[in-house]
Length: 322
Image (tube, rainbow, N blue to C red; front, side, top):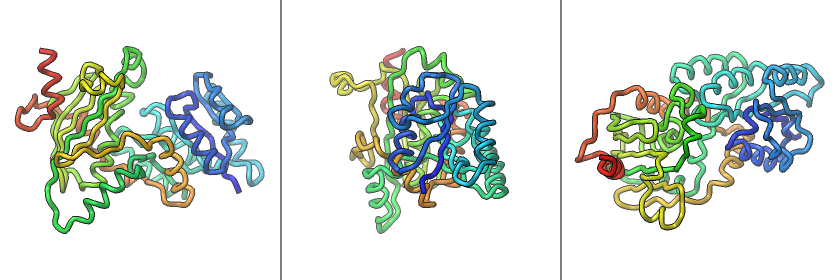
């Protein structure tokens, strides 16, 4: 029997991937909310969704469905709202008797995870996180390779992610550190999760430089030393990306070898949803280590660039802007 879904943040960038995943897994989107009403994308996937601009009316509708006959209540709430609202919207899902499926980051502050874990136990409902890189074929292959090593060695990794953003970004909630968690949290946390998942827990972390557009540093995992650089500045794009007209550049280099994962992203949410529906989704504890790392990164004082082990793109960026 199809499950009933509700969606919070229907006008957002990532919401269509959730709509597609709900559709692809044979389920129904019965209600959606967003303060903005540019949500015609709903019709591409479902033509009978109850839509609400006011969250209060959405809340009332969800409560009404909960009290109706079996088969009407909302089973899952998909959360695509701004990062700082995730905690409240997860609580809403549990309160109406639904499981929560939340975009990254699950929460901004590590201590919120403990409170949510208590609510999860009290309610008997589950909180799932979208950690889509864990389902990417190239990333799975890399993990299998590392897990299969006969001896544990320290791998050397360069993580680079540059995605051009215009001035609008910094006037939106995404440019507000208190609401988004900043560059490292908003665009980096799924990479941090992926590296921790493959190479082990964080042993040491430092930030070499941080501003509203870019941040870079170094952390040591159980089985890897990682230089990382994240940027929203188009001026940081490498020449090959500029020549090909691409506004985004992502790279994970392990011991001098590039891990190719530029494609294969379109169906990852559907894979995640399938795992959740079979009871195998990623939960609170899966998200904890990357949330701890992102929190530490945005609260530590940058040390300044270290010529011997700062990320090459960070060193280049600062030279260009001197």
